[in-house]
Length: 128
Image (cartoon, rainbow, N blue to C red; front, side, top):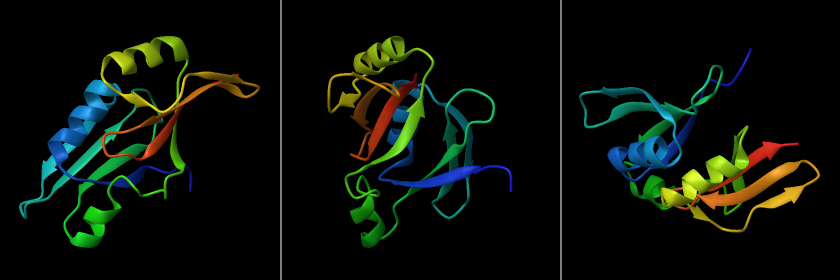
């Protein structure tokens, strides 16, 4: 096995999740295929070769709806690397991304925690 290709992220609605990932985070929409049963196969990923994708799956029952935004129990569960922390941080702020803290400059790099559309926490990180 060479790499993780996709990670499923349960979302409330496809279109609002696509808009957040493509507009606010600058991801690319790789696929949006209607599966014919009211569901879609939606994949987004950071721009660039080799990036793993997120499969955006609309919640379809009460248990899945309850998990939206809490899939990592309140911990940072996703790590988005950047080569230009200051520029990406500023662009994301302008796009309405909610940062939970001011940027920190740690031994391992520059980092700030943000919440995505529904509450899951991410690190924006430029490794040292």
